[in-house]
Image (cartoon, rainbow, N blue to C red):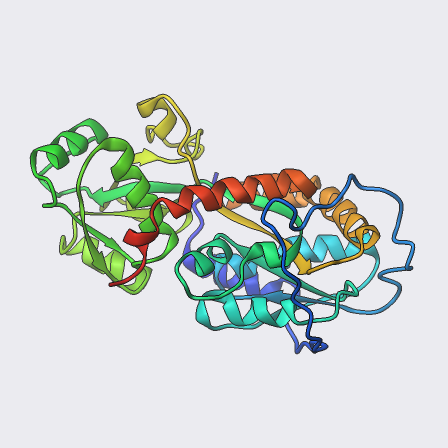
Length: 345
């Protein structure tokens, strides 16, 4: 499998479905929902009785800017869904406040099926950390489609302290709090590192850096000792010998590598990864959700989508209805245990 770098990621986003403006119909509808009852859809049935989507364009709202993984994965999959539905779906980037502005726009839109939200794990983390006063239970969950388990424990290959996972764990136990983690406080990688440290029984010190543009130079200069990186981004540094991958969080290491997996080292799968999926406004008619999910399920089973996922080291996992909600509830419950550490002080 060929290594993917940041530039191809950006180019792929530009070459897929083009973005243009969106229009959200504003309605004041935000019913109270219990987490156990929220966003439940029955098994897929017949096409929507309402005639949805007809020939009307659907607006797909993406909560982050063009060029990142959230944007890219959405555009590729949504283009396939559009073909299955036989109607145009226009993707629009609405940025700001960790995806909360985009989510609110969809939440306040009419529940007619023509405004849909694509989001990811930060959707759960925003309310957990007090960034937003609402969460995924205030929406109708259509389905989740991806688990990105391509994160890995990344260190400078010339760190002089440890050369493999076992040595890392022992060093961390012998020097509690001494090892510095380069991460964005409150982000996905910060959460994964907290969970890793908890599972290993080690203490680490966290250095708040602004994304990969700061984390990579800091690790190259050994200003920090480690980070949790996405293989599609950090893997090139492993290939050229500057970084070393001590543990891969997915159950299977990237093809052509011999990186030990977390499961092979610890005996069980790493408990969390980056999730992506689709949401409608609350109280969406079941027939519309079912019709949309049928199209997503077919698109997610296509060779084109599977090839895309393989290229970016992500796993296509389709969950809908109660299965999706149960999965999200489990992820949210796990995150709650780390809320205090995640919130910037």
